[in-house]
Length: 510
Image (tube, rainbow, N blue to C red):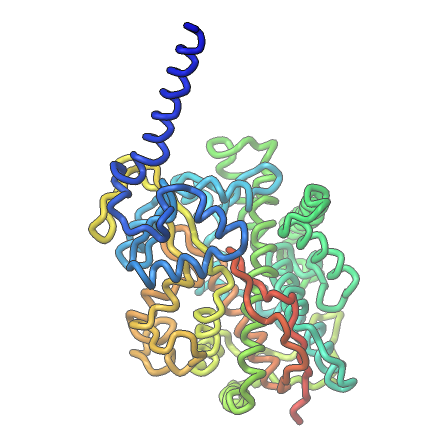
């Protein structure tokens, strides 16, 4: 009898403590209880967990902000904000990242810029490599100009010309991923060590099968990740050998481009290895970092290009206007299939100055409007509030809270972007002429590359390369849609097309 009484007392105590911990405190006492709930049950963790699991997270958070305002509570210790005050404090205030990034982005069990939790180590590593991704560097890089000429004139444009001649439709989502990888790996490792996924379709198919197995958590995910890591390590080894050869023979003309990113990061790590990392693991630090650069190039880059092609293919008049603008470049990007390429001297047709391409207003408007409406990464970018807490939009938020902003919520603010669901490149042209175009409010709310010290390292590289690809294609071809079934974007952190495809027909312009 005494035992039953004791057991009952323990069970009642556990029930009361659980009720207090999981219901009374989060619902009535927690500082977050004053923040509007995204759902009636947001004081519990189940609502947001279910939305993530079922693929409705982004749209559900957006709808909740529409209903409840710029700050909402997603769970017992999770908040979403959609305001400039939130952007400023969370992403320029040095909040540490949420541990979620470790599981999603760490390679070789080694942190990189995306998966680093703490702000200070991230800042130190970023300084080692950021120079070669700055806008002035990429616009003036002879290596980037050379590899761009070679990839366009020896790989991409010949493939499109053949498809146009044979009236063969192309899945541009797949091709865009290949082009992104070829450009990025050539810049990281040197073009002689780059992928050639534009031309080598079997190698492309194998790589992307591995990537999709890993990224979508399909059976065999661990093995696929290990093989992807081995692919990157092999290219790092080749880039190291090339770097050493160029260091020994600086005047050598046997290689068209240097391994720009690899050399920069590896040399910086070598100088700081005694105070920063174990020299024995330096190669893994480099490999983990450049692996992430490769993934970004084919993952988000392919999404961006696909939706540029999609919007242009729906609008022949816009294609014509864009081509008229592109023909003002000098030299133009006109492709002559009969013009020979001297592979011994790596001589290819000269490209326009990247500054002139970047300054084209309609191309710029199409590019940024696509990133606004079809953001490649529209999902939350979670951070953790510092121990002392913070105050955002008038609400006190304690330390240790998971807090985030979503590009989708920012880009569909109708007060900043009127008629936000419409594709209107002109909104970026009719502004004050500063920065990326548009008005000051549009630039402040634009978040395709994130913001603050953790913003996308390769944004300038991506902008230059993607604009160049768009310009080269629409100087020479028009496009029409053959099959756009499944073109709607996934409701996930990275939002690819649901159908993994956009089939277009290319038509040569004489």
